[in-house]
Figure 1 (cartoon, rainbow, N blue to C red):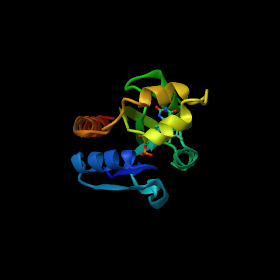
Figure 2: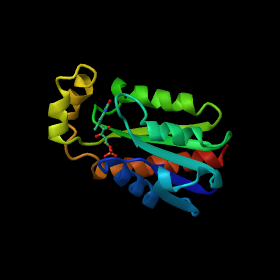
Figure 3: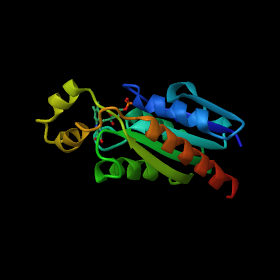
Length: 165
Ligand SMILES: Cc1cc2nc3c(=O)[nH]c(=O)nc-3n(C[C@H](O)[C@H](O)[C@H](O)COP(=O)(O)O)c2cc1C
């Protein structure tokens, strides 16, 4: 099955995860690239990686998801400053799901991604950003080797699932 790892990344966290997922993936026919440079139409499975922004999906990623033809298999992976498994990041994944209603969503995966201290400081006094910015103070060093390992396992699980569909 042809597999694409497409990502959007501003400060590099999601890009690093995308590369690790791509390298660790058992699929023989695979490709990785930024969402602006890839064409999802050519693939059977599309992994879509993005940073959670304002508890949602970045606009360019929303557009990319909407461009994927009906019936494709997709899997989402995100990086976020807030705590792993927390509600603040989950809301972005719910939104991504709502954009992919005519596709088969194989699964989702999240890990933390550090945020520059200067950005956190500038957002702490903005009510709409305060909650995640407070949590993001402890995301230093992420994504780390354990996150990369988890990401590879996630990707291979999704591929195994796709083969059994
Ligand atoms: C403008 C902005 C908004 C963000 N909003 C959120 C958010 O709502 N929730 C969250 O958990 N992290 C948030 N983050 C943190 C990013 O999701 C996190 O640092 C991510 O790993 C960045 O990925 P990238 O390096 O691939 O761009 C935000 C970061 C920025 C710069």
